[in-house]
Length: 140
Image (cartoon, rainbow, N blue to C red):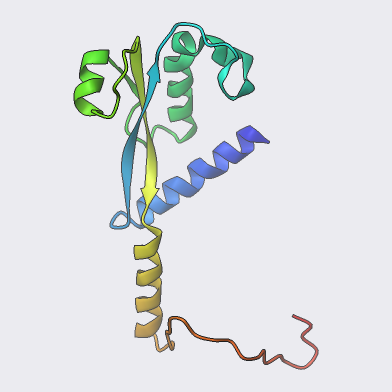
């Protein structure tokens, strides 16, 4: 279940980033590692109890699920992380950085509406629905 969901997300992300580069971008996500062992394990996965030890490999595996189409995950020292991510105000062993796609859904909606209008559709905002017109035999 979880693996299938991640694979689907990677596929969707790849399509959005390739087809709509003007509406998407890569966002670095910093995961601070404060200690070498965490208990209880994050996300309830026992392997993540030793996350700081295995996380670099896990993130490379995560990169591979997308066919390495994303910027590569990497490690960052505490000092560099504080420069790149000033909101990190704590001491950490290191920071694991990986990338996710960001999609501007408001701009996408606007682009779809403009394209529809160019093709002759009537586009409206804040329109009240007063009824439904159904074809004969259509149960909706």
